[in-house]
Image (cartoon, rainbow, N blue to C red; front, top):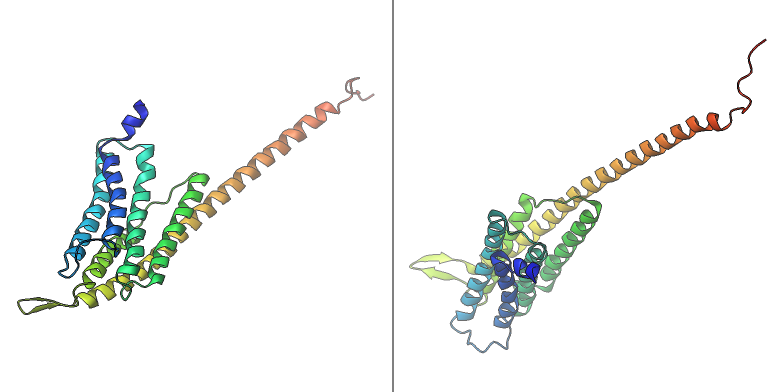
Length: 238
């Protein structure tokens, strides 16, 4: 019980709140949501919810590191919450705003997350970890921007602020396709980093195996003459 209580700390509670936001976001973007969407209230509320949930990703990590509250539960839940939030948002957007988020975009995002998760699992079994690159961080930012832009595009095509025009639709299209490009590039970069480390680990194991095999051969050659020696002792020359 003490281990469970220590695992449910403030950073982990924030992470779990991000997970609870996923079904709420999907419900808000579904036709079953009872609120009217004529005035854009749902789009704005869903955008605020997604941004706040995304911000908690940095907050829980900072609190866990600064307060020494890193737990096994948090290590498991944090990447799970990130993936659920992102993939859930894009799957919901395929139905909510299909002209901006077609189905292949959601497949691309989900496939990329599956690829990275698989590579991380293999890396963990091999005894090394692959740190998040700058491209990975850029990918996360572009995902947040593209989701919010796609949500707002569902209600507004243009924003007119006293003569200053904001082309919401154009921003949404550019953000979605830029996110797709960054996702592909970051996945390739992650795979290259994984391949370099796994190749280095394999080479190290082969060298260690060769050294151990050579050592066993040397020990074997040293033991054989003693075993084959004549029990009568050496023969002296006349």
